[in-house]
Image (cartoon, rainbow, N blue to C red; front, top):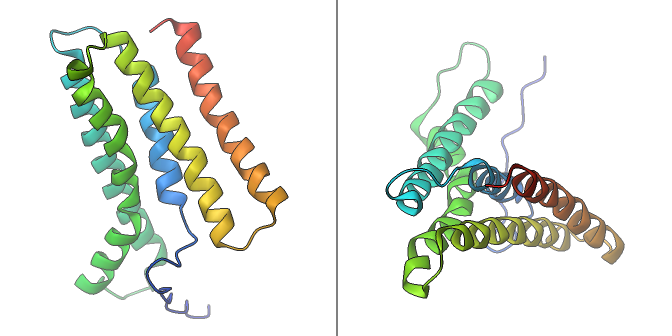
Length: 168
């Protein structure tokens, strides 16, 4: 089996892999859509759920990549663990904006239901933006950028429809 070539990092601002951000946004949308409004402090509980879920999925992705990319008989180095952790950190970053919207929603006078819909809308919107940005930075044609945006919007709208049908 040939050795895997070491990945090279693009200069800052040239990253075209937004998979973690897209995945994290879809994760945030899923968490918000399936979270009920039960509990004494539903906004605070959902903020915690978003952050904890984002961190757990980040750690899981780091572990899975490290295990999947490991050469047989080779231990992981701290350098490799930090590199993979940094590469996957966008999963956590993607949950922060929906969580922040929930956290500040009482200051905006929003009901719990409206705050949940705001967080869901933000998660879906950023998912589409990350997908389009990744396509643009990768040099995709305008048609492909639009197709990627539509595909990600469709994924998000499926979650929105599920939330609406479940009447959360």
